[in-house]
Image 1 (cartoon, rainbow over the protein chains, first blue to last red):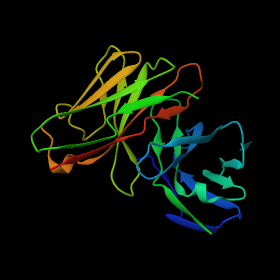
Image 2: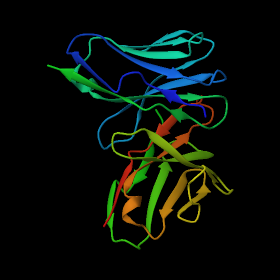
Image 3: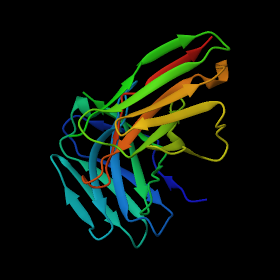
Image 4: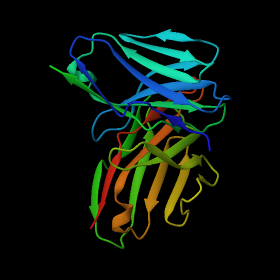
Length: 111
Length: 116
């Protein structure tokens, strides 16, 4: 079936460095993508989204890149802070109400 | 941004009892709400899609008689875990789609269910 997967289950970065979290998706019909941040014991928190007619979108300290050719999505976090430590999920939608979530990447920020 | 309130945040119950979890959209009307289940260190698994005024749509493998969903109003959906057993222990999360604000899903804070 369709799936969204992540390359790295755990990513450790030094505080102040940039973080890059990757996501691969398999449904070529997906046209909307979202990144969520989930802290322990809490619900997912929206970070940034991007539509398939774009290849880059920037937010505050975060950038999402979309490469439709290779079906790859990435989240870049600039100047990573201890508060960025969490699990990050990508999710994709193909115009329906359904959202498929990736397996998640745990980001650990080292002091 | 839109706020989704989920209650309770944590519940411990005895095996065989039923537990109701509420999900409310506080500042918007949600014609569609979603219920997810999440095991430790795993991703979110969609259980069912809840539409206001109609029957919920359950994902394959999810027992509709076990997980009762009611979406009686545009701001409230409830999930009732009937005759709960230890294997039902999990983190349950609701989300709502805010119509007119794009396709973003806004999530509740989750409910940790522990069945003894």
